[in-house]
Image (tube, rainbow, N blue to C red):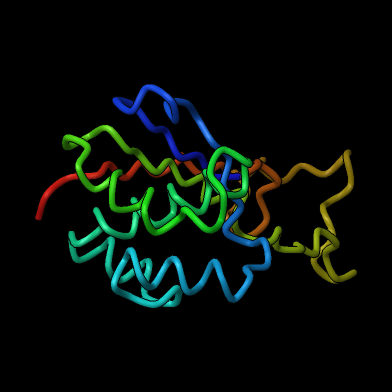
Length: 148
């Protein structure tokens, strides 16, 4: 689950969870497009290009509506107000590991590649990345509302 952190508004200050994988309503898509000036499918590209302030603001508005802090009929108006916040007062913290579905990994080796018997005289080798069972963790990505 990703988090939107809002500061500097008083009434809406706080951390709000935002699930990018959740189904969006037509109204949410409309509000997003009206505030961000790009479609939902353009989020990643827009942030990568450094044009993310409108996208982050639009996601903040959706998070506020989903949290029940803002009436859906007021979303566009609230988005306009959030655009007046100073740089860094809205942060989008994306937990990439939570947003992507878990990938299934087959941990069984075919019989001809099975591990040697315990009494084998062969040297112990480090496992390759393909066969390692160590968990892979992704650090959260933080995107801050900044001017471009």
